[in-house]
Image (tube, rainbow, N blue to C red; front, side):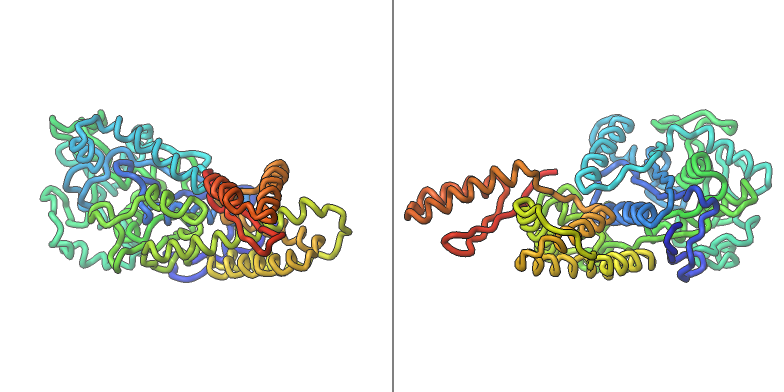
Length: 480
């Protein structure tokens, strides 16, 4: 039986008990990358949150089907259906074809996501592979009198959908009279708030496709609706995205999806807050971003993942390299205690089973994550567990330590932390080198012992001399 989980639903603005439509499967759709730039830390934080959501649900007993898309066409520089396609614009600056750019960016995306152990969704559809589904949805909207075609472009008429804007708490009446006068208005629209489902392509447009309304390309919003419904059904359990998706993208998704099917589109809307730099949203358009690759290279994959999910997903966090390096110290403490515990248990395997005192930590850990992914409280349990393990290690209480190690393994897996575990052979070989170094120190051969330390440091090991006869070691510096 699945654990009770409470999630903050943006639509209701309150925490709700999560109840999937089908007890056998939980459907989750999350908005993915528009693939024209490398993933930055702000993007990565959102993807890390959804990775945590899926891992938590599975850990607590839910069978999850996760779909996350790639946008490879139709995302314009202006949400009001104006401007240039972001991918085409970037491809021009690089003097390359848009699809070549897309392929290279998807490859880079997976490379960095794999490094920080963000699980790949079961299905990762690309928008350009689902034009037929988009056209079908648009035709349904026209038939249901929610959309209209003008000169090869098709628009959703928001005046036909009374609940338009409920997600973002928008005032539809004001939208209809032109509250968005600061945005470039396309004159052919019936209402300034109407949004494009299909856009007529000028002759010079590179990425264009055939439709019943002529040569064009899809609007950004229709893509997610078509892909979500194709793979997860007309009503899905959870839809996630960044908070910047609330006022336009997700608001439009609801209108077009429900307008086409006459059914509720999503039961639980979840939104992740921004990461800021000096109080300003981290953004590709503003150029004030740190790429995920840069952060991994600076502090390591495990510390990076720790940094991305240590704050509550609905709390805005300001990024600084100083804070990131502080998180690296916290992560390395976990790794240190784990490795030292591994070594103790490796050489002390003969112990009786005892009652597992670590279960209370796991219970509180589960309760924290079940409460709308409360990662600060969950990490507090993990860190308290690690501190207790260090005491047990010093006491050489191997029986309890073994139980605590198993619990820590569970927490690490739920968080999806990239984590290096020592093999038995590595423990034997490294310890023999450390022992040889100690023998050199006893003989007064400090030059030789320093060379061994440098060799071990070069290979990622940290040594801590406790006395002339004892050296602790662990491996915080590793490549996944």
